[in-house]
Length: 334
Ligand SMILES: NC(=O)c1ccc[n+]([C@@H]2O[C@H](COP(=O)([O-])OP(=O)(O)OC[C@H]3O[C@@H](n4cnc5c(N)ncnc54)[C@H](O)[C@@H]3O)[C@@H](O)[C@H]2O)c1
Ligand SMILES: O=C(O)C[C@H](O)C(=O)O
Image (cartoon, rainbow, N blue to C red):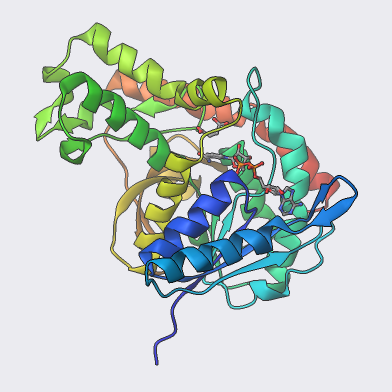
Protein backbone atom coordinates (compact mmCIF):
# COMPACT_ATOMS: atom_id res chain seq x y z
CA UNK A 1 0.00 0.00 0.00
CA UNK A 2 1.48 3.40 -1.02
CA UNK A 3 2.51 5.22 2.15
CA UNK A 4 1.60 8.88 2.40
CA UNK A 5 4.59 11.26 2.28
CA UNK A 6 5.81 12.61 5.62
CA UNK A 7 6.35 16.34 6.12
CA UNK A 8 8.15 17.42 9.28
CA UNK A 9 7.77 21.00 10.52
CA UNK A 10 10.51 22.15 12.90
CA UNK A 11 9.25 25.17 14.81
CA UNK A 12 5.50 24.97 15.43
CA UNK A 13 4.93 28.63 16.14
CA UNK A 14 2.73 31.02 14.19
CA UNK A 15 4.00 29.94 10.77
CA UNK A 16 4.74 26.28 11.57
CA UNK A 17 1.40 25.52 13.20
CA UNK A 18 -0.47 27.03 10.24
CA UNK A 19 1.65 25.00 7.82
CA UNK A 20 0.79 21.86 9.80
CA UNK A 21 -2.94 22.58 9.87
CA UNK A 22 -3.11 23.58 6.18
CA UNK A 23 -1.22 20.44 5.16
CA UNK A 24 -3.47 18.29 7.35
CA UNK A 25 -6.59 19.92 5.87
CA UNK A 26 -5.43 19.00 2.37
CA UNK A 27 -5.16 15.40 3.54
CA UNK A 28 -2.14 14.93 1.26
CA UNK A 29 0.59 14.07 3.74
CA UNK A 30 1.27 12.98 7.32
CA UNK A 31 2.67 15.77 9.48
CA UNK A 32 5.19 15.70 12.33
CA UNK A 33 5.66 18.89 14.34
CA UNK A 34 8.71 19.62 16.49
CA UNK A 35 9.17 22.41 19.00
CA UNK A 36 10.76 23.17 22.38
CA UNK A 37 8.81 23.21 25.65
CA UNK A 38 7.66 26.49 27.19
CA UNK A 39 7.46 27.71 30.80
CA UNK A 40 4.02 28.73 32.00
CA UNK A 41 4.81 30.31 35.34
CA UNK A 42 6.51 27.50 37.30
CA UNK A 43 5.07 24.80 35.02
CA UNK A 44 6.83 23.47 31.90
CA UNK A 45 4.29 22.93 29.12
CA UNK A 46 4.57 21.22 25.70
CA UNK A 47 2.52 23.36 23.27
CA UNK A 48 3.58 21.32 20.21
CA UNK A 49 1.84 18.23 21.54
CA UNK A 50 -1.29 20.23 22.29
CA UNK A 51 -1.31 21.79 18.80
CA UNK A 52 -0.93 18.39 17.12
CA UNK A 53 -3.73 16.93 19.25
CA UNK A 54 -5.96 19.93 18.51
CA UNK A 55 -5.31 19.58 14.74
CA UNK A 56 -6.15 15.86 14.92
CA UNK A 57 -9.42 16.72 16.63
CA UNK A 58 -10.11 19.37 13.97
CA UNK A 59 -9.63 16.68 11.30
CA UNK A 60 -11.99 14.33 13.14
CA UNK A 61 -14.62 17.07 13.20
CA UNK A 62 -14.53 17.39 9.40
CA UNK A 63 -13.80 13.75 8.49
CA UNK A 64 -10.35 14.33 7.07
CA UNK A 65 -7.89 11.51 7.51
CA UNK A 66 -4.27 12.55 8.11
CA UNK A 67 -1.75 11.71 10.82
CA UNK A 68 -0.44 14.69 12.81
CA UNK A 69 2.03 14.17 15.66
CA UNK A 70 3.82 16.62 17.95
CA UNK A 71 7.27 16.05 19.39
CA UNK A 72 8.91 18.08 22.12
CA UNK A 73 12.60 18.68 21.48
CA UNK A 74 15.29 20.54 23.38
CA UNK A 75 17.33 23.55 22.17
CA UNK A 76 20.38 21.27 22.50
CA UNK A 77 18.85 18.87 19.92
CA UNK A 78 17.38 16.03 22.01
CA UNK A 79 14.13 14.37 20.87
CA UNK A 80 14.49 14.55 17.08
CA UNK A 81 14.34 10.76 16.47
CA UNK A 82 10.93 11.08 14.79
CA UNK A 83 12.59 13.07 11.97
CA UNK A 84 13.55 9.65 10.60
CA UNK A 85 11.64 8.97 7.36
CA UNK A 86 10.74 12.60 6.63
CA UNK A 87 10.33 13.27 2.89
CA UNK A 88 10.23 17.05 3.36
CA UNK A 89 11.41 19.13 6.32
CA UNK A 90 10.09 22.68 6.75
CA UNK A 91 12.27 24.80 9.05
CA UNK A 92 10.22 27.52 10.75
CA UNK A 93 12.11 27.52 14.06
CA UNK A 94 13.61 30.75 15.32
CA UNK A 95 12.75 34.30 16.25
CA UNK A 96 10.52 36.54 14.14
CA UNK A 97 11.26 40.24 13.98
CA UNK A 98 9.40 42.88 15.94
CA UNK A 99 8.56 46.41 14.73
CA UNK A 100 11.68 48.44 14.02
CA UNK A 101 13.83 45.36 13.34
CA UNK A 102 15.21 44.20 10.00
CA UNK A 103 15.20 40.53 9.04
CA UNK A 104 19.03 40.63 9.18
CA UNK A 105 18.82 41.53 12.90
CA UNK A 106 17.73 37.91 13.45
CA UNK A 107 20.81 36.44 11.78
CA UNK A 108 23.05 35.42 14.67
CA UNK A 109 20.46 33.97 17.05
CA UNK A 110 18.55 32.16 14.30
CA UNK A 111 21.71 30.74 12.76
CA UNK A 112 22.69 29.22 16.09
CA UNK A 113 19.24 27.63 16.39
CA UNK A 114 19.44 26.23 12.86
CA UNK A 115 22.97 24.87 13.33
CA UNK A 116 21.67 22.49 16.03
CA UNK A 117 18.66 21.55 13.89
CA UNK A 118 20.91 20.80 10.90
CA UNK A 119 22.95 18.39 13.02
CA UNK A 120 19.74 16.47 13.74
CA UNK A 121 18.60 16.51 10.11
CA UNK A 122 21.98 15.06 9.10
CA UNK A 123 21.61 12.42 11.81
CA UNK A 124 18.04 11.34 11.10
CA UNK A 125 16.87 12.54 7.66
CA UNK A 126 19.68 12.58 5.11
CA UNK A 127 17.24 12.03 2.20
CA UNK A 128 14.81 14.82 3.04
CA UNK A 129 14.08 17.86 0.89
CA UNK A 130 14.52 21.00 2.98
CA UNK A 131 12.37 24.14 2.84
CA UNK A 132 13.95 26.93 4.89
CA UNK A 133 11.61 29.66 6.16
CA UNK A 134 13.48 31.15 9.14
CA UNK A 135 14.74 34.67 8.52
CA UNK A 136 16.83 36.17 7.11
CA UNK A 137 15.78 33.44 4.72
CA UNK A 138 18.32 33.78 1.89
CA UNK A 139 21.22 33.72 4.36
CA UNK A 140 19.61 30.91 6.37
CA UNK A 141 19.11 28.87 3.18
CA UNK A 142 22.77 29.38 2.30
CA UNK A 143 23.85 28.37 5.83
CA UNK A 144 21.56 25.31 5.91
CA UNK A 145 22.80 24.23 2.46
CA UNK A 146 26.42 24.50 3.62
CA UNK A 147 25.80 22.88 7.04
CA UNK A 148 23.86 19.93 5.62
CA UNK A 149 26.07 19.24 2.62
CA UNK A 150 22.98 18.01 0.75
CA UNK A 151 22.49 18.39 -3.02
CA UNK A 152 21.72 22.03 -3.88
CA UNK A 153 18.56 20.70 -5.57
CA UNK A 154 17.20 19.58 -2.20
CA UNK A 155 17.61 22.80 -0.19
CA UNK A 156 15.39 25.79 -0.94
CA UNK A 157 14.12 28.89 0.85
CA UNK A 158 10.52 30.09 0.83
CA UNK A 159 10.01 33.79 0.16
CA UNK A 160 9.31 34.47 -3.51
CA UNK A 161 5.96 32.69 -3.43
CA UNK A 162 4.93 34.90 -0.52
CA UNK A 163 6.27 38.10 -2.10
CA UNK A 164 4.54 37.24 -5.40
CA UNK A 165 1.27 36.64 -3.52
CA UNK A 166 1.58 40.10 -1.98
CA UNK A 167 2.34 41.64 -5.39
CA UNK A 168 -0.74 39.89 -6.86
CA UNK A 169 -2.88 41.09 -3.96
CA UNK A 170 -1.88 44.73 -4.48
CA UNK A 171 -2.35 44.50 -8.26
CA UNK A 172 -5.75 42.84 -7.76
CA UNK A 173 -6.89 45.64 -5.45
CA UNK A 174 -5.73 48.22 -8.00
CA UNK A 175 -7.25 46.75 -11.19
CA UNK A 176 -10.27 45.11 -9.48
CA UNK A 177 -9.54 41.68 -11.01
CA UNK A 178 -9.36 38.34 -9.16
CA UNK A 179 -5.82 37.34 -8.19
CA UNK A 180 -6.59 34.08 -10.05
CA UNK A 181 -6.25 35.99 -13.32
CA UNK A 182 -3.09 37.84 -12.35
CA UNK A 183 0.35 36.48 -13.16
CA UNK A 184 3.02 38.25 -11.12
CA UNK A 185 6.54 37.25 -10.14
CA UNK A 186 8.88 38.57 -7.46
CA UNK A 187 12.50 37.39 -7.52
CA UNK A 188 15.75 38.37 -5.78
CA UNK A 189 16.58 38.59 -2.09
CA UNK A 190 13.73 38.56 0.43
CA UNK A 191 14.32 42.11 1.53
CA UNK A 192 13.68 45.77 0.66
CA UNK A 193 15.52 45.32 -2.68
CA UNK A 194 13.39 42.38 -3.90
CA UNK A 195 12.48 42.54 -7.60
CA UNK A 196 8.80 42.51 -8.64
CA UNK A 197 9.05 41.74 -12.37
CA UNK A 198 6.67 44.21 -14.06
CA UNK A 199 7.84 43.14 -17.54
CA UNK A 200 6.35 39.63 -17.29
CA UNK A 201 3.38 40.41 -15.04
CA UNK A 202 -0.02 40.42 -16.67
CA UNK A 203 -3.72 40.71 -15.87
CA UNK A 204 -5.71 38.16 -17.88
CA UNK A 205 -2.88 38.13 -20.40
CA UNK A 206 -2.75 41.92 -20.76
CA UNK A 207 0.74 43.19 -19.81
CA UNK A 208 0.59 44.98 -16.46
CA UNK A 209 2.65 47.86 -17.83
CA UNK A 210 -0.18 48.56 -20.32
CA UNK A 211 -2.76 48.68 -17.54
CA UNK A 212 -1.31 51.10 -15.01
CA UNK A 213 0.71 54.35 -15.18
CA UNK A 214 4.42 54.25 -14.20
CA UNK A 215 3.83 56.04 -10.88
CA UNK A 216 1.24 53.47 -9.84
CA UNK A 217 3.55 50.62 -10.90
CA UNK A 218 6.37 51.93 -8.74
CA UNK A 219 3.93 52.34 -5.84
CA UNK A 220 3.00 48.65 -6.20
CA UNK A 221 6.67 47.68 -6.33
CA UNK A 222 7.43 49.63 -3.16
CA UNK A 223 4.47 48.25 -1.25
CA UNK A 224 5.48 44.71 -2.21
CA UNK A 225 9.09 45.29 -1.16
CA UNK A 226 7.91 46.46 2.27
CA UNK A 227 5.00 44.00 2.51
CA UNK A 228 6.54 42.06 5.38
CA UNK A 229 7.28 45.16 7.42
CA UNK A 230 3.76 46.50 6.82
CA UNK A 231 2.34 43.46 8.58
CA UNK A 232 4.96 43.47 11.36
CA UNK A 233 3.99 47.09 12.11
CA UNK A 234 0.27 46.21 12.15
CA UNK A 235 0.55 42.97 14.15
CA UNK A 236 3.69 43.47 16.26
CA UNK A 237 5.00 40.20 14.85
CA UNK A 238 5.52 38.86 11.35
CA UNK A 239 2.93 37.48 8.99
CA UNK A 240 1.96 33.81 9.13
CA UNK A 241 -1.19 33.08 7.12
CA UNK A 242 0.24 33.97 3.70
CA UNK A 243 3.69 32.54 4.54
CA UNK A 244 2.12 29.24 5.62
CA UNK A 245 0.02 29.04 2.45
CA UNK A 246 3.11 29.82 0.35
CA UNK A 247 5.06 27.03 2.03
CA UNK A 248 2.18 24.62 1.39
CA UNK A 249 2.25 25.54 -2.34
CA UNK A 250 5.89 24.45 -2.45
CA UNK A 251 5.24 21.27 -0.45
CA UNK A 252 2.32 20.35 -2.69
CA UNK A 253 4.41 20.93 -5.84
CA UNK A 254 7.04 18.51 -4.54
CA UNK A 255 4.67 15.89 -3.13
CA UNK A 256 2.46 15.80 -6.25
CA UNK A 257 5.41 16.23 -8.65
CA UNK A 258 3.30 18.83 -10.46
CA UNK A 259 6.23 20.68 -12.12
CA UNK A 260 5.10 24.11 -10.84
CA UNK A 261 7.43 27.00 -11.61
CA UNK A 262 7.75 28.97 -8.36
CA UNK A 263 10.26 31.60 -7.17
CA UNK A 264 12.43 29.97 -4.47
CA UNK A 265 15.72 30.92 -2.83
CA UNK A 266 18.28 28.43 -4.12
CA UNK A 267 22.07 28.12 -4.29
CA UNK A 268 23.41 29.55 -7.56
CA UNK A 269 26.65 28.58 -9.30
CA UNK A 270 27.87 27.53 -12.77
CA UNK A 271 25.63 28.37 -15.75
CA UNK A 272 22.76 29.76 -13.62
CA UNK A 273 25.23 31.65 -11.47
CA UNK A 274 26.65 33.29 -14.59
CA UNK A 275 23.24 34.16 -16.03
CA UNK A 276 22.07 35.65 -12.75
CA UNK A 277 25.50 37.20 -11.96
CA UNK A 278 25.19 35.52 -8.58
CA UNK A 279 27.74 32.83 -7.73
CA UNK A 280 27.95 31.05 -4.35
CA UNK A 281 24.87 32.75 -2.92
CA UNK A 282 21.22 31.81 -2.27
CA UNK A 283 18.64 34.14 -3.76
CA UNK A 284 15.13 33.88 -5.20
CA UNK A 285 14.81 32.70 -8.80
CA UNK A 286 12.04 30.85 -10.67
CA UNK A 287 12.54 27.09 -10.34
CA UNK A 288 10.60 24.07 -11.57
CA UNK A 289 9.66 21.92 -8.55
CA UNK A 290 9.10 18.15 -8.69
CA UNK A 291 9.31 15.13 -6.42
CA UNK A 292 13.10 15.37 -6.27
CA UNK A 293 13.05 19.05 -5.31
CA UNK A 294 14.46 21.68 -7.69
CA UNK A 295 14.32 20.11 -11.16
CA UNK A 296 15.40 23.13 -13.15
CA UNK A 297 16.38 26.77 -12.61
CA UNK A 298 14.62 29.05 -15.11
CA UNK A 299 16.71 31.85 -16.61
CA UNK A 300 14.02 34.50 -16.69
CA UNK A 301 14.45 37.51 -19.06
CA UNK A 302 14.78 40.91 -17.38
CA UNK A 303 14.59 44.45 -18.79
CA UNK A 304 17.77 46.52 -18.22
CA UNK A 305 16.14 48.40 -15.31
CA UNK A 306 15.05 45.08 -13.78
CA UNK A 307 18.53 43.66 -14.21
CA UNK A 308 19.84 46.72 -12.30
CA UNK A 309 17.32 46.10 -9.49
CA UNK A 310 18.37 42.44 -9.54
CA UNK A 311 22.06 43.33 -9.10
CA UNK A 312 21.20 45.59 -6.13
CA UNK A 313 19.13 42.80 -4.61
CA UNK A 314 21.89 40.20 -4.92
CA UNK A 315 24.44 42.57 -3.37
CA UNK A 316 22.08 43.32 -0.48
CA UNK A 317 22.03 39.58 0.28
CA UNK A 318 25.76 39.26 -0.24
CA UNK A 319 26.64 42.08 2.20
CA UNK A 320 25.67 39.87 5.17
CA UNK A 321 27.11 36.65 3.73
CA UNK A 322 30.45 37.44 5.36
CA UNK A 323 28.92 37.18 8.86
CA UNK A 324 27.37 33.82 7.91
CA UNK A 325 30.67 32.52 6.53
CA UNK A 326 32.49 33.61 9.71
CA UNK A 327 29.88 31.79 11.83
CA UNK A 328 30.15 28.69 9.63
CA UNK A 329 33.95 28.82 9.88
CA UNK A 330 33.62 29.06 13.67
CA UNK A 331 31.56 25.86 13.49
CA UNK A 332 34.17 24.42 11.09
CA UNK A 333 31.50 23.95 8.42
CA UNK A 334 33.55 26.01 5.91
N1 LIG B 1 10.68 33.30 4.63
C1 LIG B 1 9.56 34.01 4.86
O1 LIG B 1 8.95 34.59 3.95
C2 LIG B 1 9.02 34.09 6.27
C3 LIG B 1 7.67 34.39 6.50
C4 LIG B 1 7.21 34.42 7.82
C5 LIG B 1 8.08 34.16 8.89
N2 LIG B 1 9.39 33.89 8.61
C6 LIG B 1 10.34 33.57 9.69
O2 LIG B 1 9.98 32.29 10.23
C7 LIG B 1 10.43 32.23 11.59
C8 LIG B 1 9.27 31.80 12.48
O3 LIG B 1 8.30 32.82 12.47
P1 LIG B 1 7.00 32.66 13.42
O4 LIG B 1 6.14 33.85 13.18
O5 LIG B 1 6.45 31.30 13.25
O6 LIG B 1 7.66 32.79 14.88
P2 LIG B 1 7.13 32.14 16.24
O7 LIG B 1 7.92 32.76 17.32
O8 LIG B 1 5.65 32.18 16.28
O9 LIG B 1 7.54 30.60 16.06
C9 LIG B 1 8.88 30.19 16.11
C10 LIG B 1 8.89 28.84 16.78
O10 LIG B 1 10.23 28.35 16.81
C11 LIG B 1 10.37 27.65 18.02
N3 LIG B 1 11.78 27.48 18.39
C12 LIG B 1 12.60 28.42 18.90
N4 LIG B 1 13.81 27.88 19.15
C13 LIG B 1 13.73 26.58 18.76
C14 LIG B 1 14.64 25.49 18.76
N5 LIG B 1 15.89 25.63 19.23
N6 LIG B 1 14.23 24.28 18.29
C15 LIG B 1 12.96 24.14 17.82
N7 LIG B 1 12.04 25.12 17.81
C16 LIG B 1 12.43 26.33 18.27
C17 LIG B 1 9.63 28.50 19.05
O11 LIG B 1 9.32 27.75 20.22
C18 LIG B 1 8.40 28.90 18.25
O12 LIG B 1 7.32 28.02 18.45
C19 LIG B 1 10.98 33.63 11.92
O13 LIG B 1 12.37 33.64 11.73
C20 LIG B 1 10.31 34.51 10.86
O14 LIG B 1 11.06 35.68 10.58
C21 LIG B 1 9.88 33.84 7.34
O1 LIG C 1 8.66 40.25 7.47
C1 LIG C 1 9.03 39.34 8.21
O2 LIG C 1 9.83 39.47 9.13
C2 LIG C 1 8.48 37.94 7.98
C3 LIG C 1 8.57 37.55 6.53
O3 LIG C 1 9.86 37.68 6.02
C4 LIG C 1 7.55 38.30 5.70
O4 LIG C 1 7.96 38.86 4.64
O5 LIG C 1 6.37 38.29 6.08
